[in-house]
Image 1 (tube, one colour):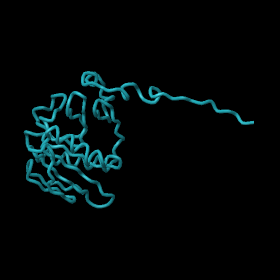
Image 2 (cartoon, rainbow, N blue to C red):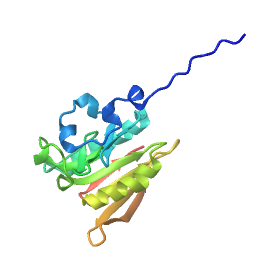
Image 3 (tube, helix red, strand yellow):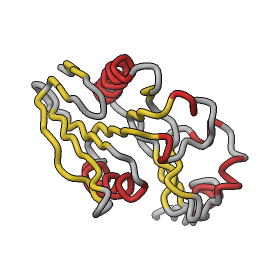
Image 4 (cartoon, rainbow, N blue to C red):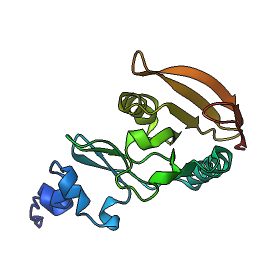
Length: 195
């Protein structure tokens, strides 16, 4: 009476390409295309796929990057969406929402922590723990001097938490918290109106 539906067994290889479920080395990653590298990060050699960000998220990142780029002067650039190589073995590439890096390293690949002055992450649903705890710890251990975390609000101005690396402990110290308008003197003077 009832027709039987044949069972379908799916393997990992059928769901995702091999390069997404095997540990990746820095040498292998260097051979990948831009399309393969877009929208992913590598943590302990494993590929992490990031979902597409919302328009609000992208706008906040762009506004922040543009303001930091202008304020930083000729020695620093601020850009979005590129890899920062935290270490080679195991491979760890993070793709901060905003990175302020030495202007003279614009053509140097990969960008390394010693090229970076500040990274900022815009927190989205699903990235709360990663942006608040995991990435902050990784950036601090890599020696990146400043970390900013932007918390979005459904209505109203975003909150911006600023952190400064304590070289004695290798951890970030809490800096100031700003609602909407960020006004700091370090790492350089800048005033940013995010709303």
